[in-house]
Length: 158
Image 1: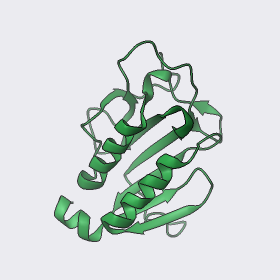
Image 2: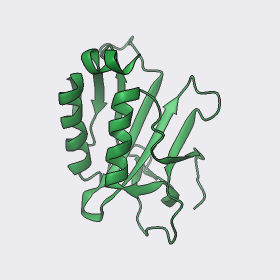
Image 3: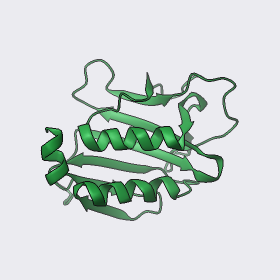
């Protein structure tokens, strides 16, 4: 989808850390949703988001997204972590945000509330960087290039 089409017909489907499903239409509503996600403490559950020109998972049969963005945020600490899955990306189908700065924050951000799995600490980035990445994602519908990424490892090394 071209960015000009996305801005006019963009639909973001999200399951928030609060357990509430939300659907936004257009850039303004989607930016407001991102602000809400970045302000919300993700203590026990992550938020998952998909973007396209349809509402995803509107029925059990679908439609199903081919790409998804997962995010966890701790506003009080100024930290977030992102995971991006794109089944059409032959080079890095699943990736975590990557922070090359050391020392790593001594913080665990939830990756999967069902399993209790957390992001590797190398995935923790500033909320400002996460906001830039999410804004870019809204404009391109692709894994944002404004932050660094590392291939996903289920038990990532720090």
